[in-house]
Length: 453
Image 1 (cartoon, one colour):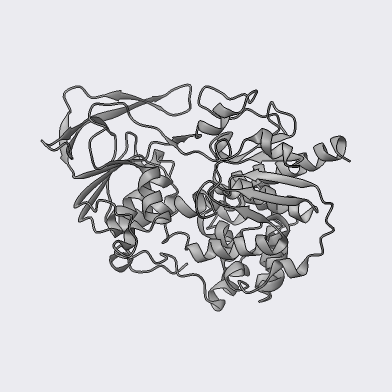
Image 2: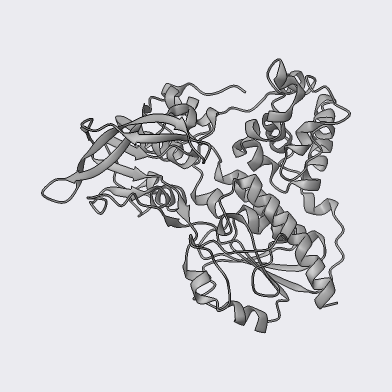
């Protein structure tokens, strides 16, 4: 897919990938072999009929391609942009054995972008059953579960604690990867199907789960995501201008601090920024810091680049834009000035050893390898645990040692009628969270038929 020049794109928040034009789409779609036993479908967490939608694109019929996509995926415009297709559907494409796989994600994006004006709610006739279900959290898992339940005829209300819906899709993914208008279009279609979204309502504080049942909801799906940052627990981490990636990206994405002073949520704009971590969130934070005006951005990761969990595409884009990868390096302490602002990081070099029981190489510190990296801002992208507030306020809800809600195979929690999915039950990509939401929707329907009807 065509991309914007790195030297231009690194100073704005416009999309990096330009999208296919028609001729490029047709050329790529016609590469699909239309396998009789398509392995790519098995690689898709939500089971999209990939050959079928690509067949319609090869015939230059994006509208019908979109109909096929929407059978299993309510958010093709989103998934076409941010899903790790190279580790899912494209990984199993038969063409990948000798050449490059079909660019399934790029074709999905084309179908969605070129049918954006289609109102999917107008093509569906839904028979309502009057049974009310509450969804807690408006991220990918909650919206997917709610969308499927709407199509089954249920009355669905989504409760969101923040002032805009979308969860991690809105506050965690930068504009240059997922423009907010794309998310808003998908939300608009769900609302037209009948989804009610109530904002600024923190379930557990504003109202309890018990109160939701008293109000007449017959089942509840918890999809509150992961919002509790993990810190390295080293000296100096409480210095000023050290952010968790969660706070940093929320300020920039949801609160528009990149548009200060038009919006009143400023964030420190560093000259020399350092991001610690190697996942997609670390890449997002590093590239965001660059776009906010940083002259130099370093990304510190304790393993090698090939071991980074971030998508290959995101690593390539980051390096093209000038992000400096400092690998096999671990922070030891943060150093502050007299005003308690961070001014440097003391680091230690790491050495990779043999593969251990975890399947990863054992790391050991190189004694005496300590050195200093100067910086005036640090972003910690070391992962997240679930927000502990809701689970801690619900009596009888069982959680594990990391705060994840425990569920059975159907995503039913320890409380009858209460289900959970997405990051609140364990780390998940957007499409994996959607898979959980879809599976939970079927389980909720089965539960309600056995208990309410």
